[in-house]
Length: 453
Image (cartoon, rainbow, N blue to C red; front, side, top):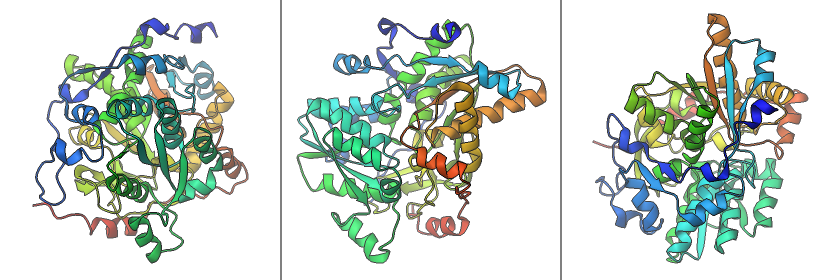
């Protein structure tokens, strides 16, 4: 335990800034486009949905963005989060690799999501927002924003993907405990939800559908704003508190990662860990390998097309250039609800295109096997989403074993699985269906991509 304890930072050493990777990109990103004019969007186009402070962060080119003191004071309830050396897992795998993990399950809601939820609620409160709408997949984001809105006295409506709403009832109850309202999506509360239910009353939902419902409700009310839990630049940037801390902790450990691993759905927890290290790679030519791990059933980075697409199923959002399976694609109903998104964050997609990161996809059975082995070795039960990062780290460690290489691996364990034990039960009872890539469904969705000259 002494080896683990020395990687806890003192509260006074918690980073005071977020890192903005846009300042160090070797090649700039393509801009978001207005869906009507196909021209780059401006602040006025986003103002109905977001407070101006977040819009400014979204387009900022500054390398460091100061974390407001009220946000840092709330962070101090669980930050800095610990970094552990996974010695027992190393022994179990019999690998020469050194494996470290940054553990975000110590937050009040058990995941990395409060890092941006608190920030977004703060900036909304500063500009007088009375109510926020949002979507959530597995419920980690919805419960985190509910926690943050409760702190700042903001009303919250959450549209939760229906399959997760039914699979994970305790996450809904956490949202309600914090004072939020939670609705299964697609719902009959919105025009976009009603349209989808009219076509398919048994639709299991998707993050794209839930986003459409939340955006629609925010756009109808001048006192309501919309909040997104991943994908956008400012959301990814808020998560870099994770990587900034990890840089300091790896220095304390006298080590530096050769390989960085994270799970990817929309891209926020992956970005939070790896962006500060990628910044050093760009500025100092460090030879660091970065691996994004995604589900085989929703493989936007490994199978998706890099084009402009809508971020939601109802086509209410701006067009962004990203790796996408098509905004009309409905991913299979796997337990990793937080990774069931048709597109990848534009910034993460851009990094994949320029060769700064690589991507791997895994099936949910092999991911749960990795999660169980991790729990039996390290004592922490990972969330289903996080098992993809565990699997990716194990795969990298076994590659080191095969090649006889003693490399250092760092991954982000983005949340615990305490409310996901039904999923583990399905695994143990052999009731866990292997997720499959719906190539025909993806091809059909890609046929409906917007036409950009």
